[in-house]
Picture: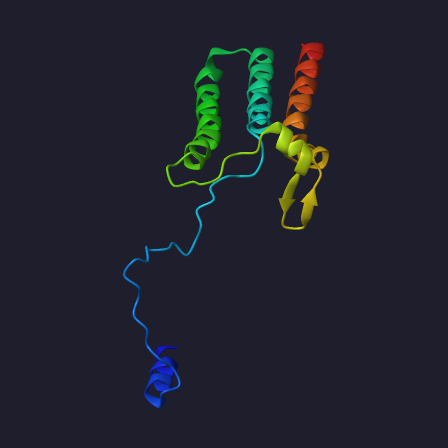
Length: 145
């Protein structure tokens, strides 16, 4: 690539222009560390995951499960805490949508704009099914024992 540019300069087809003195450095990539969804959806997801742990932990209460449950809680905290800190870094120009903005605009995805209802269903389907599954397992365990 640089060889082509040098050839054009040598032929006189291109001209070299110096950088203006008042120009400030411009970043080529804008830092958008926001995930586009309102914080309430992340809080609901965390609540579902922790609710599953509470349901299963109380259904199968055993002191042996204390350490694995604590490790899982720490992993959930890290999985949501690190991106939350990352999204609030100093050079991040964007902020998460509020619920009102989310209800008005929805969210843009790779395949097009999603309505708020559809995006909420896509985000919360797995956590809600996990809670339902935990309840089903707890009910089966209570009936069998």
